[in-house]
Amino acid sequence: MQFIDLQAQRARIETEINTAIQGVVESGRYVMGPEVFELEKQLGAYSEASHVISCANGTEAIALPLMAWELKPRQAVFCPSFTFVATAQVVPWLGAVPVFIDIDPVTYNMCPKSLEAAIEAIKADGQLTPSVVIAVDLFGQPANYPEIAAIARKHDLKLIADTAQGFGCTLDGKHPLHWADVATTSFFPAKPLGCYGDGGAVLTNDAALGELVESLRVYGKVTPTDAAERNFNHDPKYLSLRVGMNSRLDTIQAAVLLEKLKIFDDENDKRQTVAERYADGLKDHVLSVPKVIEGGRSVWAQYVIEHENRDGLQAHLQAAGIPSAVYYPVPIHMQDFAEHFPTAPAGLPVTEAKSKTVIALPMHPYLDEESQTRVIDAVRGFNG
Image (cartoon, rainbow, N blue to C red):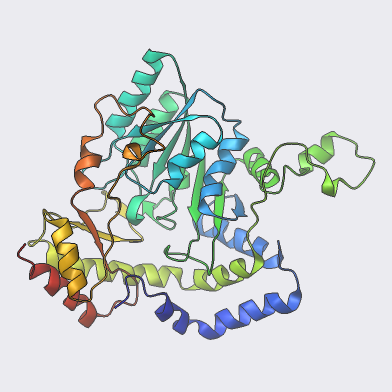
């Protein structure tokens, strides 16, 4: 049994994937080939984003808008601690300071009350300037964007929707970008929409920001606006006007993603079916099964339950040949690199409690009923 069965997906579209990859190989356009721009176009149509800038990975997708906004030392960026470290690690890159926020005990996403308290505390302290909020669509479901966005607007802060685990999720039929200045995502292979390597994207409806991010992903290259405002006496191809990075998505990865995007909605429907079977089989036998925010639709990047003896359950599943994973046993604010950064004034009690009880079960569109029943029976049969 696989935790995430990427080979089952590959078998479904093997011919299409092989043809797409071979097409790139034969074209010789391995970097920024036409498939990259076609993917950006289709991602924009899918998520209602007027500007999509693909990049090398999901971490740099978060860093690029922060660079575009010229994030500086002593500026505060508010983010959850109960997520992968990438969300927070990009902030010190730019000399700024992450401020860690507690989570909602039901959805595991950023708690608006904790966020507002942290912003007020940072303002009162006066040593840092509140600047950006990064909300995370953890485990595939949308954060509480109506409340988070209202808080961000109230305090004049930028809002990033980190949809690395949740690309395709919606709230009241709207994608996270409806509320955020920027949405970012990752195409890491294990994501619901994943490539065969690494990749990411920045999505925005701000034309000026999109143009600037596009420049920054290629060493701060000249933009159309730059060219219109200045007279260059030579081809500006090798001219950098700002400090950027090399964060281009490989053409082969774009070709793979184009094929996977064709079956993305169908796979999300299948994940929903798997999630419903889990909930029916486990809801009375564990501390909790996932609950999606009202009006929300998850893409089920993970299926996470809670158990009072999480470690014992994981050992029991391992003995039965059933894979599992723990996200995240050590919250970011408790890790060495981050323990000196500030947290919300009431601390992060929910984050710390959940880190001791959560465990993720096998989840993917191709998990058949027989295999899933085996997982459910194993969890229900654990008496530790």
